[in-house]
Length: 154
Image (tube, rainbow, N blue to C red; front, side, top):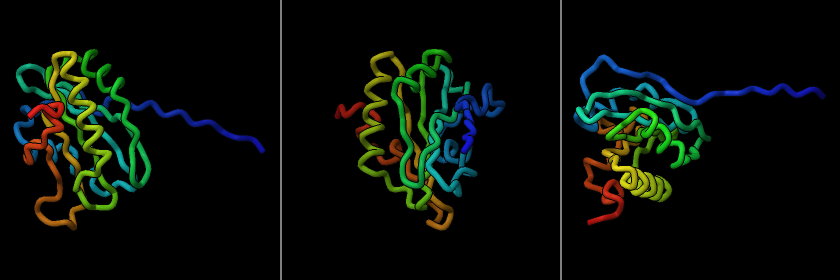
């Protein structure tokens, strides 16, 4: 039986966005809300410059129905290569429930701590749920003042 290999390069979705910076979790959500109905978890990184302009949106992971592998090293690489001052993570939950899992919280903490080491900052982690879960169909770590964004520092 002959097998066929398929290679997928994960990377830039958009750069130098013509819109103003996303100033709130709702605006971040609106940038990627069309990913709500995806059948597997996908994780995006939104990169901002020092003036809060979006300088890139990158696809970082395509996972399974209930997880997506995140490599902190690759997030740091993107931040450094784009000279990004701030970053936000966005991913979906195919289950439709935007509530963060224990793994989501651990990953957010790990990325926030790593970004602090290179003088950058994770400003939000937005989890997109299905539209059927009401008006607030996303969860924002920033809106909930979750300590993971501060690297666990109170």
